[in-house]
Length: 288
Image 1 (cartoon, rainbow, N blue to C red):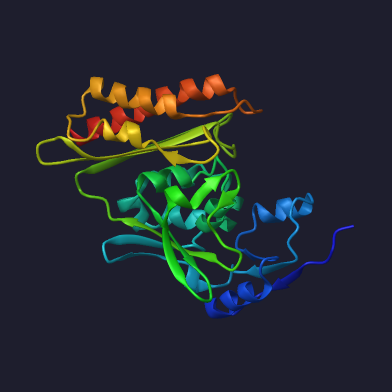
Image 2 (image 1 turned 180 degrees about the horizontal axis):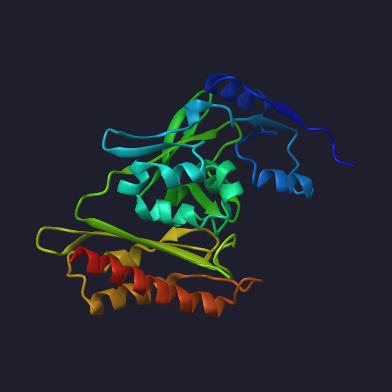
């Protein structure tokens, strides 16, 4: 028989942080609940209390601040699709949001919740990694920013402490000489967990040489991550097919996929190579 669970509904962020501190480590923040409620129903969650963040407007919104695009942790996936700032400065994140689950889930699910869940197939992780995003972790006693690439440490594991919540996510406003590309591979076109997802960002200087590169994949390793060794091979060079081929090979070699119900490891590795090649080529052609 499932034990009773307390639900707290704070009126503001200060109260929410106090409740998390008071009930740690058994109290957990609850936003959209699209993953947590399912796990709770199936008996896979053993927390004793939830702090409901869904009504806190302080955790929602999208703005430009000090050279960063900043989104509140409670911003929903649907918010990403319809916000002009995301359309202008993070089209790859908008593309990921558009293929995230289904409309009902998108209306409830939050960006912070998708990252905190730390699934290897988290849809928002690859585009945010490619955008070089940081996560703001807030507790009653401290505020800290950590790189998203460091925040997710493994399957369902993050740096989030028991009394913390994800207050915001931010990334530098991309240069006008930068272009991104995104792709998701699934068993069907809609409402599917990724077989793999990928995002790239490329930026060139006035001479047309690559000065920034980001390649990020999800569902091909225990956590979504950037392929730094592959990125480095592009820097300072023209984005020619032969140079892209080197980066693609290194990225594919760095993947660590598994066999599961959605695809074999060998299939994921091969599709990773093909997808990264297509995305880098697409971005390079747009920059020309």
